[in-house]
Length: 349
Image (cartoon, rainbow, N blue to C red; front, side):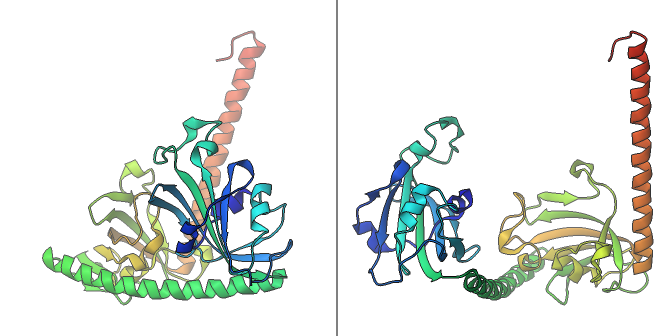
């Protein structure tokens, strides 16, 4: 299946370079690195694999996807209906512990439609898939158990990496603030807050919804979002749900909630948010690269209790319904008028 092709890839052993490729179907070339001792894969088994995918031109290797650094081991069914036949014919030969390299000349991949070849891919290069078969499971229950264990391991690994990155970002921000003579206070989780205008009343806590204006930038000053700049297409106040009640709205990045706890109504501030408290190693879209420190200009317009927030949401929903009703009525009236014109022999505009 296409999913299998998209995510296929794995650990490539150095000894594989010593072996010749065998010919597979539909232009595929492959080689299997095996000691011949592992459990033989059978149809219906579940495969746990590390996977890697790259574009290879000579000694140059551009990695497209590597499960070891992204999703973790992939689990697939060894079944002729779950992957293309030409891949199944090769995969079904594997034993537990085997490594596999499959390659396909990109010229063959785009032969029918060469214009669709991405500009970064050069003719004569190979689309290379490498696979390390880590384990074989006989049942779905065994596979699911292994998957859950991997998820827990991935979560732990992410938390360790985030903690390490937070330390690195904190040192960078301290130096950055000192160099630029910015007076900012560090929040409980690690966000640095520069108060530009003091507010009034009690500080924000986790029992409220906060109406805000904001503009977000990367460290180089590039704006990636704002609700005060019309070029971003949304200029209404942004509600930040500080509570654990998801009916009042979805949450925001941790750097926001950390910083907002230091503000009150009417306050204006600038947040300097470490990447671990923003979008981390994954980043967000084209503008926010992995491990990006972010800067936000924040204004607290109002602070609502849960009841006030629910009433405000209900009022906004009613306003939306009324606008929709008016639009429908206008459309119906326009159609009725057009029907009259056509019935009288006029031309439809």
